[in-house]
Image 1 (spheres, rainbow, N blue to C red):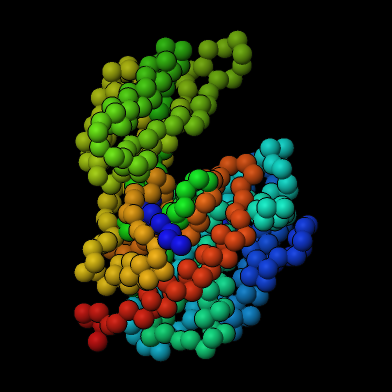
Image 2 (image 1 turned 90 degrees about the vertical axis):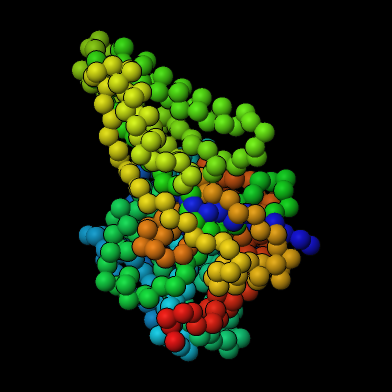
Length: 424
């Protein structure tokens, strides 16, 4: 069969899968995934509040995995209570630049009343769908990395380049106490990174394709916080800003060009805060917007638009950035690039068609790219409805197992890229 991957060029959890499952026993390679989800039950509050640090239970899970793989694991506290775990498979030529397989260890909140099954129990239904928070985002990839490495080591393989598996906290809340801080840490520099893989996204239920996210990263996730004083009048005007931004997107989509979600700027009003009582007019209102801006947009010009819209709304309307990333580096997807060539040629050998796409989210790989390092987003999930951050998130066991096979081919290809200029 032919599989299509979408390669994402820009972008914006691990709970442990190894414990008890409430249904039939899993395939051996599914047990770690089940344990990862089960461990989330211990690591995180099952309400709307989620702990974005790497919990003791998750650390113990990773330590057990490292022991099973007979590989060393290092723990790096990048901020108080925020630990990055690194499992390393040293290559035969450790002086060469390494390959990083990155995943984040946190998940978004759940509302259990909307789930068919306990979101932290890894229940498998009669169709082979495994339900659990993080089953798509991105504990599946975490375990696929691990199990691919397990298979390769069991087969007696070893590659010239060192492979690091990094497990990073805080991604779901912006990465400030995770990857953003880690890339400035001396331990990050010691990794001697040449290339990194991170999460991508899946394709819809009725397609025969994976969505692969290689390339650069989707633009930054940029929530803009508008402080709306004298709310009654200005909140209406502030909502006009939301309308203006949506009209910008719609006007671009209503053309003959073929766009994906990652090609356009998107906006969602996600929070409104203010007021003290029902019968008191608030002195101030705070309205937050989540903007996803593609790397093809001039960010300085875009901010000038925001300034103009605020001025138009009234002199008491001001804005501030909760997150603001100005770097717009792309990872090369030219066939002349050795990393991309290793990736794309391996996919071609697996009869996989690649389509490059801008990822409409913001993942940890944006911080890696800001350091001038190539990084690609890729999650081998096809025939899968997009349910990350949604209720009843699940991944089918056959899709999961196929993903291990994909990484079993990709990891050797990347870890065997011949020495590049300056490495010999």
